[in-house]
Image (tube, rainbow, N blue to C red; front, side, top):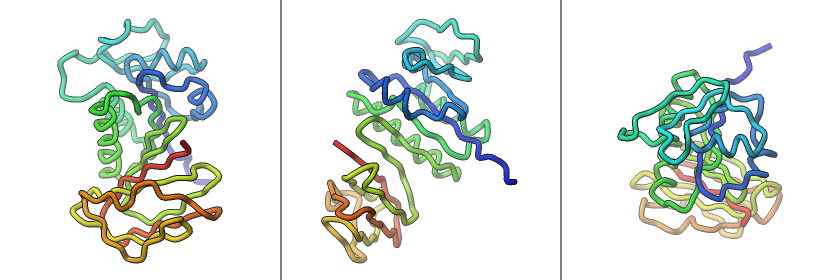
Length: 209
């Protein structure tokens, strides 16, 4: 038998995150890291984190019986980014980040950059909430309508060349540039849609809202 993949789940503290969604969807068999006030969501969801990392400027330092890494309040990385780096350091092969899509656009964008940090190191990663899932890829992929009806693709390189089939708006070797909105708000029309990435790098956002 092969070795089991080392998976890490990070729970961040974006306001108004859906606790029931976190409770139902988090992989409890993964290594769970709470980012600062994300530990409060863990408590509400009945989840015991394996590790908590944060500067605790938005919450009290928790009294959990688990490892806690306290960060300085003035630092280069966000609490979530620090958690991602720790997950990578511990050998994670995949990372799922909950509670990281919130009302602060700058924080959400920083969390998207966590995905690229992981991708550069060969680690699959995604941001997840009850309405969206985001990931970055240079590889072709299939989308299943059972999970999300809508999807958007954005080029993170100067130009990307892609083909899309099984969607409302299909493309054939079409060019996206980094300032293009061509790939916004597409819809899966069959059971699956296929996105072929011929060149470039994409930010993919799936939505069921």
